[in-house]
Image (tube, rainbow over all chains, first blue to last red; front, top):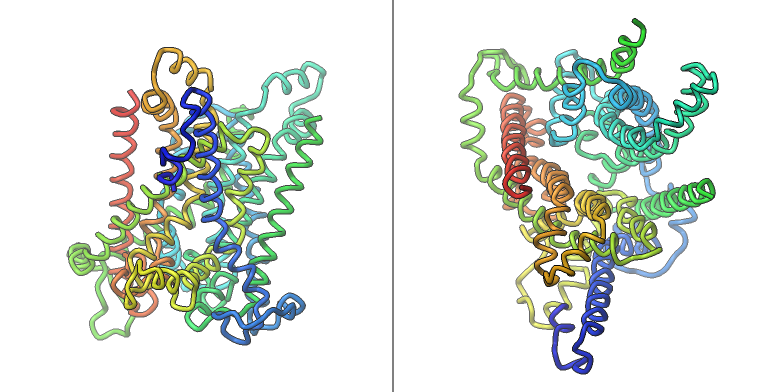
Length: 278
Length: 282
């Protein structure tokens, strides 16, 4: 692509700095369009084929229909899998956010012996390939004769989400102005009141962001889930198993729905932030 | 006294959890990796015999898949870096008031399920998709060439799927660069390329290091892309570990392979951080 633009025969006249700036700006614009097209091709494909009047295997375009959107649970098992994913996602997010936020406050707000070891313990799960996390946890469950299933999956998700919560909340705590808390103390608020009325509200957006991240990580996880969920189906597992014989269009409906829902949440979040900033 | 205890009390539940469900499993995995089948026992019954030969056997038997995992992950990481760097740079410096909007656009595709996107690529690049017939009509690929079930498709899928892990840290560190340093470089008669090489790139190194690690680690252990977009000839070490666990019930080999993978990644990461941290940055 860049070759086309670099072709010297197109604009020859303004050779000076002005042209260079024009060229630079437009090259990067063209590049952005290409990059975003690449990013969105599979999303557009998934969305388009959610309207396919496909029958069982959603491989070839057979005609437009709204039936898949009217009845997203029409394909067998797909909504059971979705419901499991949502339940696991909420439970994992709840526990990981609480445990992770506590760790983030300890590391971000206190100086204590073993702080660097704590940081290492938070970093390690993120530096371990998912397949090792999944496989090792399954081995442990097998030793204790715990059958893989719903709760083992929740435990696995909490485990890998904690580190991401800690990192996100810690970053927010680090960006706080310590003078705000000092001011509260100066105004005779005790430690608990300062925390409840100053620190916590200021850290809250970070906690909310961490919870959203944890939910999306949990909802989209396949490898660790595949090891620890046994016969319990989740949405990614459903897609993986169905991939061999063709995925029903209802899965595309759910995937596209998730896409728009998440987009709406992010945009709403930005609006709230902007309002608060005013 | 209470103040000294506070951080430890805050850490206790979370670290208790991580100890039980992260450290303990890893130790248990180490323990499993040197076991051998119980003589005369059922499939899946193993006893501890401290057979370290398991590691050598597992590695020799699967060295091809090991090599493939690291080469695929390396190519995908480099490609993701090449694609992401200009994108992150453009968002940080050239997007004006659309900055937040463009950042959302980078993450947005990843709200559709990872599996669905990978399957979408399989169908787009497959025989029924529109890419293969077009390329054939144009004479770019021959009638017998396919795009899916190839290492090309696997690497492409990995590059695509791990792209935001590269773009976001790159953006974070490029966005922190003070544009005045770039102007200063220009004022000192550096051309655009020299400015990039001597100012922008060194200042964005933390993002490059973080991005490459966040892409390389999951890519090396991935087996979903290879399973969906590849063929038996593109199997990675993740596929081997998965099938050892579920199809063959050979826990010791799977454990030895997992441990070798983890060790290899940790060593590579340490060497890489040292290199990027001392030689390139100074």
